[in-house]
Length: 455
Image (cartoon, rainbow, N blue to C red; front, side, top):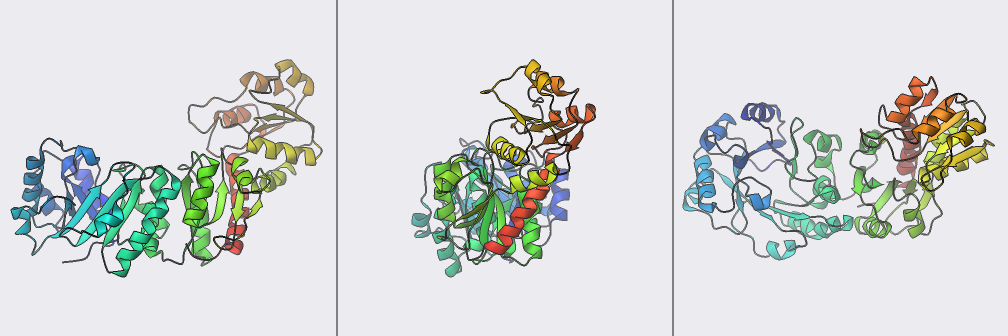
């Protein structure tokens, strides 16, 4: 019987034909997880046969994020026993359950994965490893309340690796993504992935293509951790931008989204996880550097090794300054009051351009905008992050239209309402994607040259 591959891909598709097609496309290092609770009307043995036995069979209870009623434990075990008749390669049975006779009789050809999903606030991994149930592989799943919770898994995973124990231990939720991606580096034997053409089975589960692009199966204890920190960050293009550059430079670094919106929590996580390089986004561009004793706003931090002093830069300012140098000079209407707006204002003033800044806390009238006669508009608010967001200060934009010649959009999503308005007005537009590329390239250089050491 084969060992459990590194990637376990949960078949979450709405229909069996889609799930089966996905399973047939999976590479050799990815095993399909057949969730019987997602296909309750189908014959379990027939499903296993369709997968040619190459699967991990699970029937997840509602209390563990599945769909099988908790009130029907006998029916669930009966359903699993039917699947065993198809001789699957692996079967998932909860950690605390005794092995039923029907399943015990199949142990010559079916391997057992023993799993436990603990409630939020419970962290009993080390204790459970001291009293392992019968099985060939083990899975412990908790919940990440804080970003630094991920680091609590590392000692147990290293312990299991040193003893040849096939263990996966990770945390659910957006803040648990580091534990999923870093399983291989920390000693985990396998990790779970969502299908590339289906929804995630649990909060924080990443698509298989993402884990493969990040080369998570190849990570080793010497890899260093970088990431983008803020809230929200799961939409960030940073991982897709930086990881290929690290790989091409033969740099043992991994760049992840680090979901956190509070500076104190961020500082604790940086030290607990040994983060070496950091892209800072809202709402932390001012608060996090200050908490680390640095003067902000900064969007980039790096250090050679954990415990070393942080170095900081504002590559947003560098990118904006480059864009500004090719734009028609004259007065500028600046929309927003956060860290990006502060960076923009400093760059504009350094270039000798008059600035009229507007925000909810600093309102101005359309008449004031018209009298100011801006040739440029800089959109530095958070509006545009969501598809339904309108353009900010619509009445002020219309007041600026007669004199305006160019516009800058900081949000790097395509076709924000502001970008659409600027195009319709015939303005030369610096898109957020262009600013992102320029500032991220400057970040990558600093990470590659300045970060080293181990996780």
